[in-house]
Every structure is written in structure tokens, then in C-alpha cells.
Image (cartoon, rainbow, N blue to C red; front, side):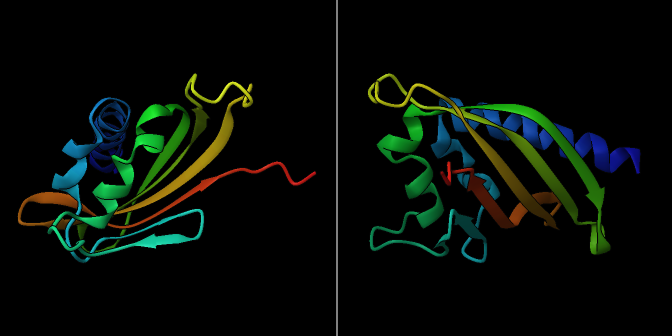
Length: 133
């Protein structure tokens, strides 16, 4: 069980470092079968230029300007050497949006599947909390 915790922790640290600095580098953990949902928008497959739609979204100007801070995470082993990861944290909007003077809570669920001696994101759910007042 400890090995899954270490692998999950290592993945989360690497993933958020790349998300905050160079999201294009995340392409190595996604493939055509990966499905990612960001606040009810679903991304899978490739665009007309052959780029993964997930990476196209993660490297879009609005996504690249925000910074993500991890507050807590947990990992669990699953069948067939898969790993489930749950991450909670907050997103800090960029300075280009002065009307937004606060951070937003986020939650991410990741299903890592082992393929060819590496872990790939098979499913990922990403949600930013919204003020419902």
C-alpha cells in the first residue's frame, strides 16, 4: 500500500508543477483514450492538428495564467495496479482579472492506469467551486 501512496504523491507533485509552469509537458500522461472533465466540459481525443484536446485546453491562455495550490490529497490502490487520487486545493486567478480578488477551491479526481511500465491518466474529473449566492 505504501508504494501506491508514494507513486500517487510523486505524480501529484510532478503534475501540479507542470500545470503551473509548462502544461504542454503533461502530454506524456494522456493518450487518445484519456477522458478529462473540467466543470462539465469533456475532452478526449485529438484536434484537427493532431494535438490532444486535453493539452490544448490545459495550455490555453486562461488556464496557463492561473496558479494551483495543493491543500490535501489522498491515494488508493485499485484493481489491475491502478491508482485513484483525490486532490483538493485552490486556484489563484492571474493579475489580468482584477475584478477577481479571491481564490477558488478545486477538487480533482484522477484514475491512473498502468500501461507499458508507466502510469497514464485514464479518467480525470476537475471541479472549481462556484459561489452559488
